[in-house]
Image 1 (cartoon, chains in turn red, purple):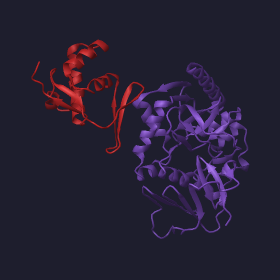
Image 2 (cartoon, chains in turn brown, purple):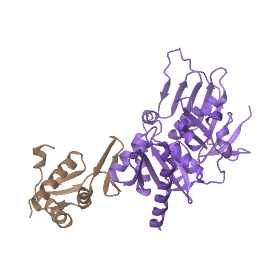
Image 3 (cartoon, helix red, strand yellow):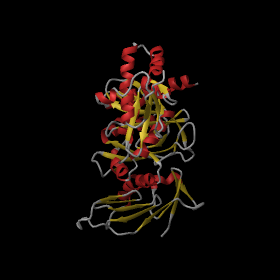
Image 4 (cartoon, one colour):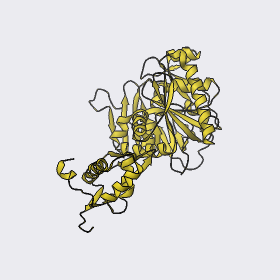
Length: 103
Length: 305
């Protein structure tokens, strides 16, 4: 993940899932096997929660709102970690981003 | 040539080769249409001809065992065996019901796991391990304590229906290292050696033909270490299971089926807990390990209820 892609997001960016590869739960992890590419993608508990939230178009800010109430994390750290995760998901082609200008 | 009929691992097999290891699954008549045909014939691939010893594609697998014979497995339906001159049938069979059968099941897309399975209180417990980590020894020890052996070395697990997966009863042969045999009080003198590795033997047990496919309650991954059992979860569980449970990974990979196997494994692990069982690398501890395992099984059965 480069600095450039990491700055693709701010709290107003709208993100939503954009893949047909199904994730399924194995204990606390969400795993997706990409049979074509031969990869296994793995999301831990907090990343799995983000994945659930982006099933419908959601702003990065509201993702952080949810995570800050459900996990012991401060808002700045949360925003940074979420942006990092979303960058990785974007690079893997799992999500799409809309840059919202409306409040 | 006289044919034999078997109903094995959920498949109807007609064979020109008599398979004493599959005797509990032998049928008097062919029944309905056969799924698999095992025949003698074909061409013995000459060891000196420069031909590759193994050819594997998605639908065909051919391999040569020098001094023993060659095996052709086609379309998930047919195995053709060409014995080397003067070779005894008992030397062919381990390859026939091992590698060739495994390749055939893979061709059919069946979920074949490198594991042994024992019946404990009405359901199956599977043991996986990396090579030489004692999976057969564990099954044999439980067997001597009165728990029926369901399958050794290869387990055909069916995950197609919703709910608890089932494992088919398999060939009652146990591969054991000779020192483990001493520990169990069995005589190594009357056993057929496993040609692939010195010191390993096939012990032929009598399977109970009345055993039906059994629900799989738990999977244990055997490791050396301090006594202990812990639950493996998530990605870690999947990775550990894949590393220990694939039978002949080279063949599976050449067939382009590693992804399918991974998906099947994921489904299995969503429905059945995977435990890591560590115990000291000491044959004198086999009995203690079996006791630990039985206790663990019954505790978790209580928790399930």
